[in-house]
Image (tube, rainbow, N blue to C red; front, side, top):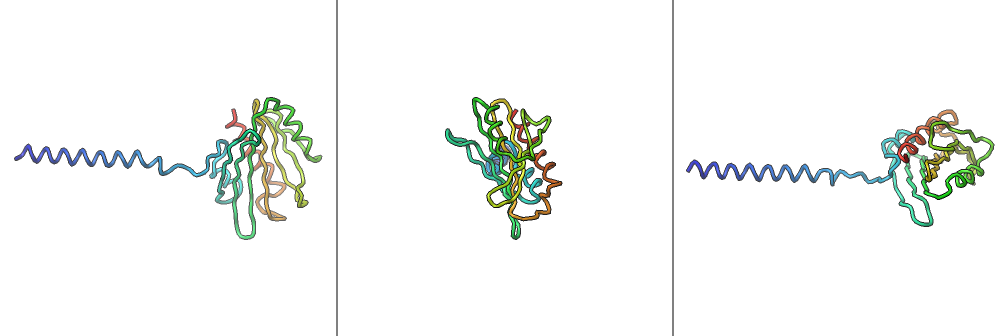
Length: 176
């Protein structure tokens, strides 16, 4: 009688261990992040944009580069951080081409990939914005911040260079 009770107790223990093991192995599958951007995560982007950023990733195709877009939406505004990465055989020429679209406000950035520069430009709506253009080996990257607010208290002309530098640091570091 005692051996039968021990055998049943052993089976219960085995089933409990199996159940717990199944739960532990299943947790990482259900906790996978929605954003698959290989260069920046939503938490870092949210910190740069000042809130809870939602990210999307578009994989590269033969005709278009990879694009990560992070959006933070609030009452009456939307802030966007866009990262574009393309692989090209002549990255130096591509960077020069992209930098030629900058207005007079271009300044080189040290320690961020190769040939990186902060570029100031205007968009079709007349708003000014900054972006970083650079490369790591044969990968050309462009990082841009955009806001729908005329005078955004977070993305001010004084704070934007530090934010864009932080994003460029992360992206270029992950491209190495």
